[in-house]
Amino acid sequence: MLACKKCMFLTEEEKCPLCSGELSKEWQGMLVIIDHTSSDIAEHMGIKANGRFALKVR
Ligand SMILES: [Zn+2]
Image 1: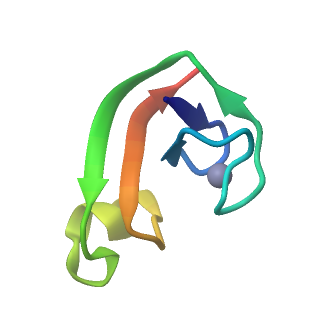
Image 2: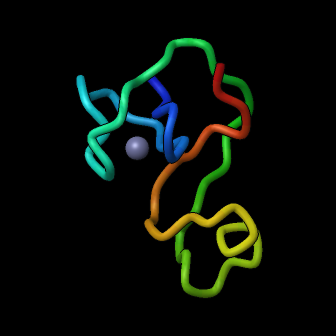
C-alpha cells in the first residue's frame, strides 16, 4: 500500500484517487476515517474524504 505525499490517502493504485498526488512507500501509522463529516480527527487533519490515511509520509 502507498501513501499520498499531499493528502496522506492510502491507496493501492498508481496515483492518488483524491488529488492525483505523488505516492510514497515510506509512511507510518494508519488512520481509518469512516465518516469524515463527524470525525474531529478528520477535521483537525483537513481530511475531506472517507478511507485510510497515513499519519506520517516521507
Ligand atoms: Zn492525495
